[in-house]
Length: 397
Image (cartoon, rainbow, N blue to C red):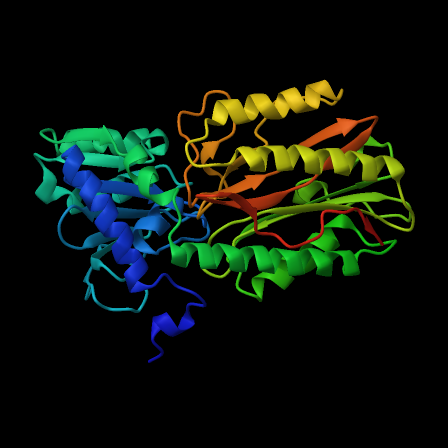
C-alpha cells in the first residue's frame, strides 16, 4: 500500500509541528485553557492547518480538538459513525492525532449539523468541567456553541483566537523558507502570464493558464484575478472569475493578481500591470507613485510599529500628491490564510513583529485608469525585505 505521506508534495516537518504545539500549549497553560477547538470548511484551513497540518476540500467540515496534554482528535467528513484510533507518531499525514471521528455530513445540509456537533462534543467528553478555548470564535457556528452548552453544561467557553494568533503570525525559519518558495513561484507565474497574453485571448483563459502553471508546481489553492480595458477606461479593475470573459484587445491595459499558496500551503500575492502593443506614460508615472507608497509602508514595517500610524502615513502621502486615499486595507499579514493579522487599518490592535509576512498592495483609480502594485515583505529586526523579485515596472507586451 502506498504511504499517504508519499502523496503529499510538501508537508510540515515534525520539528515544525512540535514547535507550534509547544508554544501554543505554553500559552494555554498560562491562560488556564484545557483544550482548543478549531473548525474550517475552506481549503485554506488557517487555524486547523496550523494546529494539525490538515486541510479540507469541497466545503467539507474539518474540526480539530487540541488538548493541553496528549494528542489531537480530528472530526471530519467520512464513514458513518467512524471512530478510528491513530498512531500519533505516524507520518502518513496525521501526525499528533490519536483519534479520527467521521460522519458523512455536509455544511450545506442543515440537519447534518447535529451529526457534526455530536462528534465534536463526543470528543470533548473528558473536558466536561474544563475550560474550552474556541479558536476563531467569531466564526464558530451558533449550533455548535448551543450543543456544547447542552452536552457539557459545566464547561467554560472562552475565545482563544488571540492566543493562537500570538504564535502563528510570527513565522519560523521553516515557514519563511516555504514563503520564499511561494514568492518565487509567483514571480515565475507572472512572467509566464505575460507570455500567454495576446490579442484575442479571454481573461479567463489567461487565469486558467496561470492556475495550472502554479498547481503543477505545488500550489494548493489560490485566487487569480485579471482586468483589462483600453487606457483610461476604469472597467479594467481586477475581476473575479465570473467576470473574466472579456476578450483582450491590442492596446489594452491588463492588471493581474496571483494570490496563491505555494508548496507547503503558505500564501503570498503578486500584482503587476502590462499594456499590450503600446505604452502609457500615465501608467508608468502612476506606478512610480505607487511604488513610492509601497516603499513608505515597507519603511514603517519594523518591530513594534503601530498599524494605525502606518495607515495614516500611507493616506497622508497619497493625499499630499492629490491621489485618492485608501478606504480599504492596503497591507495585511498572510500565512495559511490569504488574510491574517495584522491589518493596516486604523482600528488594528496588534503591532508589527519580526517574522511577519506582510502583503502590500496600494491601489487607486486615477483619471479613469486602475493603478496598483502588489508584493510581499518579510519583517526582520532590521526592517522589511521585499521577497518578490519580479521587476516593478509596466510590462510592455
